[in-house]
Length: 249
Image (tube, rainbow, N blue to C red; front, side, top):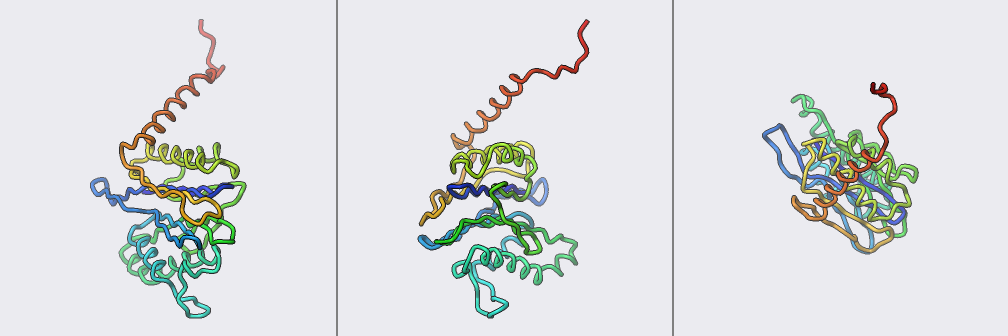
């Protein structure tokens, strides 16, 4: 299982992913699901992956090597994509390419072709954008009214993002809320776990502002978890009990 969240606010982009993968209760491993493609001063992209690990690794390899453009036959890469939309199309085309090659064998083995991705970033002089790419290669885009997208085990972390994040949220407040969302998911699903990879890209910046991995025992994340738990307990104690119970004799 996986949990990845991308948050696009006025000041920039936050991308957060866990690293746990498992093929059963006794086969748990750590693999990086957050991939950075960066050409300083020109463009920065972040790709986060969920689903079958062999499929996602093949897609990332296709993106690193480039894919033939169906209209021109030329090799198209993330470095020469003319826009974020074209770059997202390249991600989708890479997924379909892997499906064409591996799909029949996976179907024969009764293995579902399962993949979803978050793809975000900015090309210099163009808007910063964030997309969710599905296993068919089609995609949707993040918007101002709902400034985040999630893949994987998203249901436990979504209420927190819904309540706390708007397009005008400070960039590092968005990171903080994203980490609380990740912690809530980790507490409710053992298939999501540390380390956590994160990237922060400020809008119109020449370089990636922050690329960091949170390991087990990191003081800030431990403190965040404890403070959030304490705040929830205090909040529920401060709310009056429902007035529905029968009067005590």
